Amino acid sequence: MTTSATDYFLCGWHVRSEFPLPELAPWQDTQHPPDITLTLSEPEFVDPSAPTVWSNFHIEAPALGRVEIPAICTFSVKDGREIRLRVEPGADPIEVRNFLYGTGLGIICHQRSIFPLHGSCLSLGGRAVIFSGHSGAGKSTLAAALTQRGHAMLSDDVCALEPTTEGWSVRPAFPRVKLLPQSLEILPDLKQSGVHAALQGKYHFRFENVSAFSRKTTPLAAIYFLERAKAGEPTALLRKTGMEALRLVQQQVFRRRAGELLGRRAALFAASGAIVSNVPVYVLRRAFDLRRLQETIDRLEEAHEAVPAQNGFIPV
Image (cartoon, rainbow, N blue to C red; front, side, top):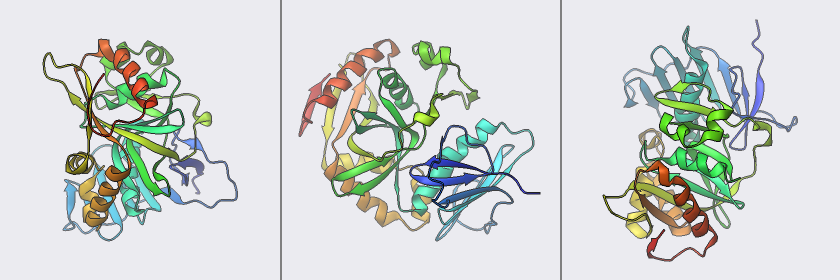
């Protein structure tokens, strides 16, 4: 029995999948063969003694990764082209997709020599802006709030970056965000539109007009690393350069250990240096006060339109 497959768009790649991926935009070029195939089949075997990123996440250099999530799914990614997926009985399809869009996409980027930065990305006036930082820093909340100002979502969790003749650009992934319940309370338009499930403590929101999702690679204008302000400290943007900027980018390489085990340690370091040499890097330090979110967005939009500062402290 043959399982039917559907064609999708992901980061400029043609994905042909036997497992439904409704957050992805449909693929439109019928003449272009698949770049990536996802089949519902037994994942590739990996030697149990192979190095691990974490328990049940093995990497077998130069081009194979296998991830097992108990009670949800197991999948392998080979050569950045072939995904084999086994879904466990009773598993929530949204949970399965969460791991494919996160760790699965991260592995594909490493295998295809694309730089994956952990963050949420939007297009502001035709230029990409990334909000990065540790989990829980508010990246997705800030991005979702900006979509309510008319800015287009490009990716959430994994930002696929590549060099161009003009600098660096972002490959658009999908218009989906994961939000904490308290974030939805201050984003009523999203809440009223409906969320699709609770996902590891977060709600999975898919923007409904997937077919209108921009497929254009977008030039990267700035990266903002989110940090918590100290009590009484004003909200501010602080330009980072040199080793400080390099450290911030290196810390947020998505699944960096997987990339290093695939032999990309030197390449990731070199790419991080090239990014901070060509793209303004800022720390956005603000209180974690959701009531002031719109104020923060006002300032970000103003800063985005202004000429980027070369160094120093810019109160917002």
